[in-house]
Image 1 (cartoon, rainbow, N blue to C red):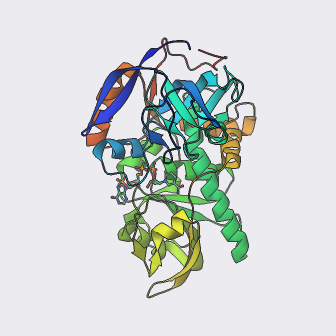
Image 2 (image 1 turned 90 degrees about the vertical axis):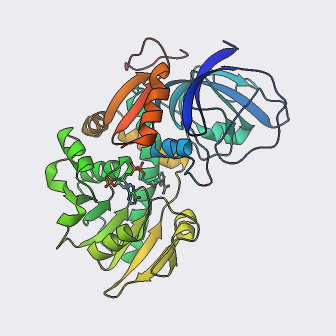
Length: 377
Ligand SMILES: NC(=O)c1ccc[n+]([C@@H]2O[C@H](COP(=O)([O-])OP(=O)(O)OC[C@H]3O[C@@H](n4cnc5c(N)ncnc54)[C@H](OP(=O)(O)O)[C@@H]3O)[C@@H](O)[C@H]2O)c1
């Protein structure tokens, strides 16, 4: 073990604090719920393993802020956009020490806060191995915090491709993405890189201005919801923070009759639109026919990401592929701040209470460098 004490950010009663933690051997219990964040000690039961991960960079996601505010449903995943290096593994060899990884938050492991100098991860061996996705040594740490959200976006765009094929529609046909947060901006950037005509729609102007001013996306693809009169597309994706009725109504308005509406946005149990149970549709990745007064269309759910989606996301950011460098540069421009862990509590407390645009990143190591990382740090 390299060290027995380390610093991490934890939240309690709506406030984030920097705390000092100790790695202590503890007996292991049954595997907890997906992404449960709590104490995790070295492995103690057969079939279990524990890994210590040293994050080089952690992206801040809206869901982290929801956890701080107590408004997140079902999952606990505080600090999950992690790029780091494995510094210890028991039993030895399950994941090589020195391996750079990104965290896949979907496998069922128990872990401590991801906003930390070290993250203690524990669980069934197959789950822990699945949660740690190898990252090439030459991938820039800060840019790589986008691998996890980009994997979810790759998954969503694969679902769109499948549904497009099944409907016999044009796979290169136009797409309207509704919601210009991180997910929507990534979707629009990836579709643009594939030469698919895309319109990114947002209810308010500030996010569109941010993306334009930073050179993430050109003005020509950005529209406020008020500017969508006359817009009709065969395919639309709902990628807002919440799948509220107004947003789904907008998607239903812009999609052509018999078109596709892909549901990616967060849903809550019991939520419905046009008699379709949205939460079940999204979580179980179903397809349903929806009807409004003026048309019928297909609603398609997208949930999570697979190892293949993580591979696809890393491939999209591979700096050795010249035609993909531009996508990486666009994502770099979405990074609003790169701060040490010591400033993380103030940052998260401020973001949890105010507007949240762009991608803030915390870097626990000292000194910080965005040069490609080597082995163990
Ligand atoms: N399907 C999956 O597998 C999957 C995976 C990861 C994330 N997600 C979900 O994807 C969604 C987008 O994630 P993100 O990181 O891009 O979030 P985000 O940055 O918070 O999204 C911001 C967008 O949501 C809009 N918005 C904010 N509050 C809203 C509300 N109450 N009602 C309707 N729209 C609202 C914003 O509009 P303004 O600019 O006008 O405020 C903006 O368009 C989240 O719901 C997340 O849970 C899904």
